[in-house]
Length: 147
Image 1 (cartoon, rainbow, N blue to C red):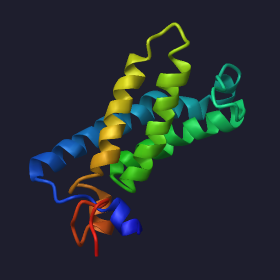
Image 2 (cartoon, helix red, strand yellow):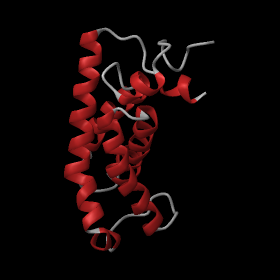
Image 3 (cartoon, rainbow, N blue to C red):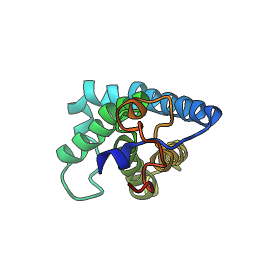
């Protein structure tokens, strides 16, 4: 089951190179520009962090920090890419559709991140990923491949 979920497809070299660039660009940008700051200043963020899901500020901020640090690094590595991408898709979907829609800013950056993470959720990590080494020996599209 995991092999099917995380196996990258049989993408062309240019497609896999594009997925590598997208993973590195979005994963490292999220980690360095958002995740590390939340991790280093968790208490500062907790004082003003919204609770749009009603689960509490600390659990919500913990989930966001996990997505923006661990999820972002996993994504950049291409390790369990679809899992990493889904954590970030949820993070950014909440930001775009629940937080920024009522805030003064339009949330355009969050919307762009969401598009990239959704693309990686669908496409997977590509040939140049740890997923390929761990799960991709048999090839196939990952989600649609049958034994």
